[in-house]
Length: 211
Ligand SMILES: Cc1cn([C@H]2C[C@H](O)[C@@H](COP(=O)(O)OP(=O)(O)OP(=O)(O)O)O2)c(=O)[nH]c1=O
Image: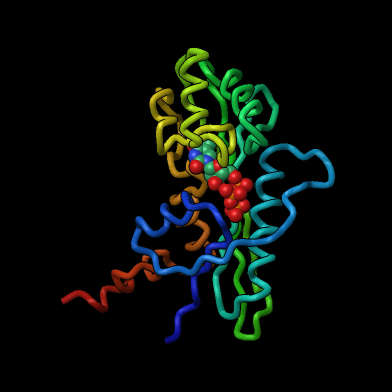
C-alpha cells in the first residue's frame, strides 16, 4: 500500500529538527501565509488558527498527504509575545520574562489530502507548557541578544539553546516549547486513524518487519 506523504508546513529549523530527530520521513514546504490575525483572540485560539492556516496553505499543493502546521507564542500576564522585531524588542521581552513563570502555547494542525489534492480531513489542537526562568542581569540579557539566538524565536529565547542557561524548569511538554509537541502530534495522528510509527524510517508498527 502506498503511504500518505508526511509534510511539515514550516520554515522553522527547530520544528524540522524535532521531527528528523525521531527518524520520521517527511518533506518540508514552508507556508507563505500572512501571520496577522484580523481580531484579537485568546492565545489558544490564535495559535490554532495560525497553525491551521499554515497547514491548509501548504496542503493546496500536496496530494495524498498529511500536512502538519504549527504556531508558537509566549504568554505573560495574559499578553502575547511573538517573535521580536528587533534587538530592542528582544531586550524588553527578556526583561519582562526573567525571574518569572510564563506559558508557551503551541498550536498544531493536521490536514489530510486525497489523491486529487482535495482536503479530506483536518484537526487542530494546542498545548500549554509553563516555563520558569531565573533572573537575568542586564549584562546577561545584552550578551544573549548579541548571540542572535533570540531574534527568530517567540518570547526571544530558545529553551533548546543558550536560553537553557536561564530556564530552571518547566511544567508540561518540552517539545511544545521548542515549537511542536511530539506527544500531541502522536495523539492527533492516532486519532485520525494512523500511527506516527508508520511514518518513521524504522518500518511499520504491525510487527511485519520483526522476525
Ligand atoms: C519559546 C521558543 C520558541 N521557539 C521558536 C519556535 C518557532 O520557530 C518560533 C515561533 O515562531 P512561529 O511563527 O510559530 O514559527 P516560524 O515563523 O519560526 O516558522 P513557521 O511559521 O514557518 O512554522 O519560536 C524556539 O525555538 N524555542 C523556544 O524555546
